[in-house]
Amino acid sequence: MKLAGLRNFFSANKDIATNVGTGSVLAGAFGTLAGGPGVGLGSALIDFGVTYPLTALARKLRPPKQSTTNFIRTPDGKYTPAPEYSKAETVANLGGSVLSAGLSAGLMPGMPIESTVSSQDQTLYHEMLQRQQINNLQVPQAVAPGTQFQMAGIEFLNQYINPLAQTQYSLPVPARVQQALDQTGMRLM
Image (cartoon, rainbow, N blue to C red):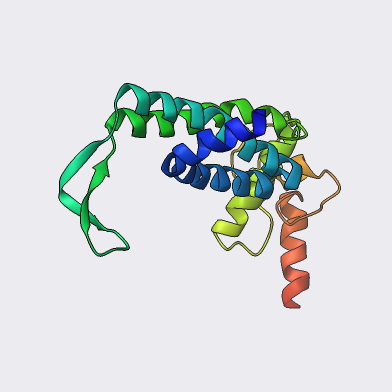
């Protein structure tokens, strides 16, 4: 008995069912893409269940008027005025879709939460890698410890950063002179 009543109700308002059904199919398709077939079916049913009664109520309060400019050709060849639906019906249709989207959000599976907390050292390291890539640098950038002060061209601080590194700038002056002489093959007399 109830199914026959529903069938009569929907058959009396086929155009509402068509308009609302189109939106429900779209809601179901997006739900399927986002969460699978179960979420899609649930989204479509919730959309139709919320939007159809709101649109039918808006039509009952503001019935469509007959158009003076648009006509529909009937199967027997006559022209009849096309119905012009009220703006209240359009607002009810769109509002029902927005409301149903909020109601069907609970069907979506939860997304895992990733921690966004990272240490300062990790952050500096990633920023330096980004700068190195953007500036097309061939060697990694050196920064003063705990800062972002770039030390390119300040090679005398290598001893501070890496005490085991022996560069010409970390040697005392006589040793630097001797190293330069050794590299050129010259000797002091």
